[in-house]
Image 1: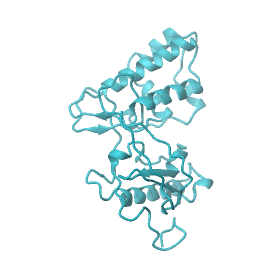
Image 2 (image 1 turned 120 degrees about the vertical axis):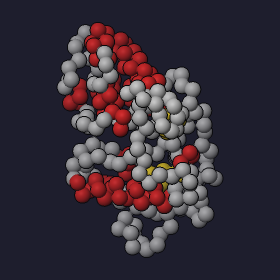
Image 3 (image 1 turned 90 degrees about the vertical axis):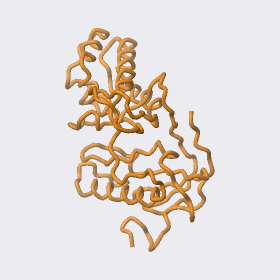
Image 4 (image 1 turned 90 degrees about the horizontal axis):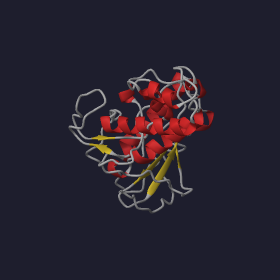
Length: 255
């Protein structure tokens, strides 16, 4: 019996259903990090090739303990198990994915977006400003494929195609601190000088991870193919690993 299910041998998706990663670009499969609250990772919505959606919910999500090592470990184990079972028939499935590295084009877009916001507010960027920047960035970049050979932020080239997932506000702020000349450029556009520890304290503490391992989002003019995140209005859900009783139909739109 699975510790996250309420019964034995519960199927986790409709019989015969096939789920492909290409139809589920909205899913962030990276691990949860201790100390970083990411409630959205307690729920997984997967769309199969017929357009049906199954929703999986971590049973212990209501007693979230983001600073507790065991709780975070249990959540990551549950997520990994769901991904292995749901995408097992997709030949492109990799058990332990790495985050897409920041491409030069994506970093340029993000830099322009931050400077545009700073110029508009004419003051120190607030928590709300960073959230708006993140939302705009993700609306455009989430699901974009960075092709093999594309120039990356650090100057090297992408060794293979990379699918960009959702970038968190924390990750975007972490990158802001590392883009050469960006902070000074933003300071020139605002009345208040931005210090390295100013608005960073208003949201989740920035990870010490490499910015290439962090999430990010969109570009106004990108040549790649963008698969937009779709929210399903169905009330169907799966607790632990149980599938929706009546999966809703739908079509994944690609721009």
